[in-house]
Amino acid sequence: MTSSPEHSTIISETTCPLCEEGAKSHLQEGSIMIGYIHSTESFGTVDGPGVRFVIFFQGCPMRCLYCHNPDSWQIRTQQAPAGTPMTAAELLELYERNKEFYQNGGITCTGGEPLMQMGFLTELFSAAKQRGVHTCLDTSGIVFSESRLAEFDALTQVTDLVMLDIKHIDDEKHRELTGHSNAPVLAFAQYLSDKGIPVWIRHVIVPGWTDSEAEQDALGYFLGGIKTLKALDVLPYHTMGVRKYESLGIPYPLEGVPAVTPAQAGAAREVILKGLKRRLRDNILGKQ
Ligand code: SF4
View 1 (cartoon, rainbow, N blue to C red):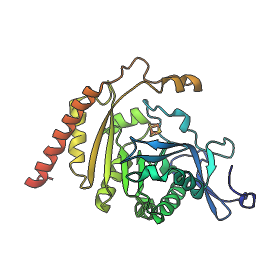
View 2 (cartoon, rainbow, N blue to C red):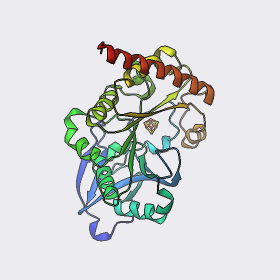
View 3 (tube, protein in one colour):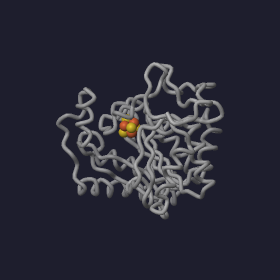
View 4 (tube, rainbow, N blue to C red):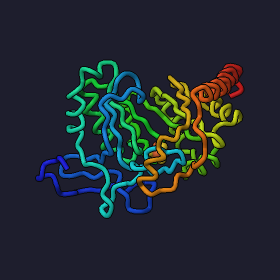
């Protein structure tokens, strides 16, 4: 805990929109908003353009079978504290220590799921933008809701780039893979397109789950409708998270599923791009 004692009284709590368990999306102490942070990384090179200060938020409602950060799942409650309480100023102070390295980069917020603490995330990005820092949000998009458009509008005004993970284009498979429908995720992608927010899509190729050409083609066809798509990362499934499951005493859900090679992920990317181009052709021909 690094905030000053005079701000130690909790004056408001926001209930998580997804959980019925009394989870809090953020706590506000005095006039200082507090975020709950799993960890930070000073020199991230795979979480957006350039070298970046990466902030891992604590708490995620998803349970992706291939998640390699199960230690970030726990959402902070009064009964179960999780994450390190930090202010935006404290995080930006960490950024400032190495800012000469971030000339072509910036700050990326990832998790866990940063949108579970949207008020704090918006405050952090607002403060970063005031300093001219490039802001990138890496998210599953699962929290998106039409009923929270004002909050999303405020956040996207201070977000330069969204890296959106689409876990599965088929809703039923998405539910099996993550525990949730993909409807909010796809709606968020469309929202970002309509708002003119640049989007990088990430998609993990998992044997038996996302390795069919039909799924990849359908994903590409959907992406062809996202006008602000800037990049597509197709990532190979790996097993590097297994040890974390062992240390947490959680059975690994994809036991025995082999890792995917970069070449296999590259081939999948080509199939996705074919679907995307098919959609673009249909757009031109007025079929969509
Ligand atoms: S959304 Fe990310 S952090 Fe959450 S379970 Fe899925 S992979 Fe893990």
